[in-house]
Image (cartoon, rainbow, N blue to C red; front, side, top):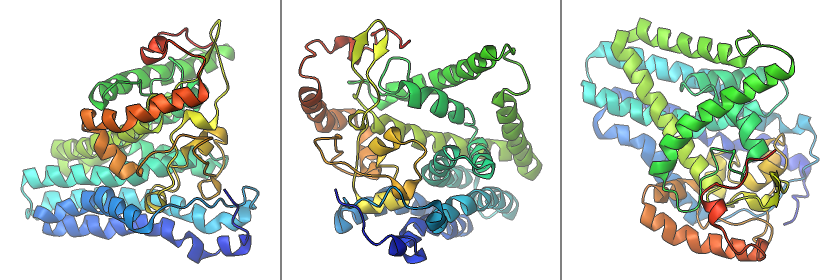
Length: 380
C-alpha cells in the first residue's frame, strides 16, 4: 500500500466531501415521513442496496493517507461527525411529532417508518458515536454519549473501550462472533453479555480506586439519565405511542450495530499462549474491507484491522492492509451484513476463508475446538 503523497489536497473539503454523503439520508427520512407507503423503503434502499451497487461500480481503494497528517488538516472530516448528532436528534423527534399529530400515516406505517429510521441512527449514528468516543476532546465524547443514548445503548461506550478493545478475540469479549455461530444466536447473546461485561468493567475500575459500584462517577448513572431523558421526551411528544416508536427506532439501530459487530471479527481469535495469556492484538484479528463507497458511508469503519491496531487514529487516516497482513472480506459491510442474515450462505462464503486464515497464521494449532467454543481460559 502506498501513502497519498499530496497532503494539502487530502485536507481540502472536496477530498472529504464523499464522507458527507450520509447527510443525504436526512431529506430522505423527511420525504418518507411526508409520503409514507413505499417511500419508507428509501432508507434501507439508499444504504444497504445503493452502497452495495456503488461498491461494485466504483471498486476498491487501497491507497493509504499519511498517518502523520496534522490534526488541523482533518477539520472537514471531523466536522461531519460533529454536526450529525443534533441533526439526528432533531430528525427523529421532529418526525415523531409530525407523524403522530398529522394523522396521514396509520400506526403500521409509523412503525415501519421508525424501524427505517433505526437504519439511519444505526448505520450512521452509532458509527459516528464509535468514532467520537475514541477521541480525547470532551465535546466529541459527549456527542458520542448523546448518540448512544438516543438508541438506548449507552453502555456500548464502556463495553467497547474497556472490554472489546482489550479482550477482542478471546473468550472474555462478547462481541467476537464464534466460528459456526449464527447471527441469530450471536444477537441475543451479545445483548445480554455486553451489558453485564460493561457494568463489571466500570465497577472494577471504581474498585481499584476503593470506590463502590454505585459511586456517582460510574458512567452508568450518566447513561441512565440521558436515556431516561430521551424516553421522557418521546412521552411528552406522543405519550406511550411515542415511547414505543422511539424504542422501535432504537431496537433496529442496535440490530444494525450488532450485525456489523458480527461481521468484523467473525471466527478470528487470538492465540492462547498458556496460563490465561494471549498474544497481542494484530491486524489479522479483524476483517478488512477496501470497498470505496461503503467506506464513505461508514467513515472507513471497514479499515477495521488498523482501527484495532491504532484505536485513537481518526477515521480519515486509517490504513488498509494487503491480504498477507489482514484477512479481506469479499464485499463491503452492506452486502456482508445482509449475507449474515442467511446462515447457510454466510458459512459457505466465510468458512473457507477462515480455514485459510488459520493455515496462514497458526499452522501449529491442530485443535481449534477451544477457540470455536470460547472455552479457552479467560485472559488474565
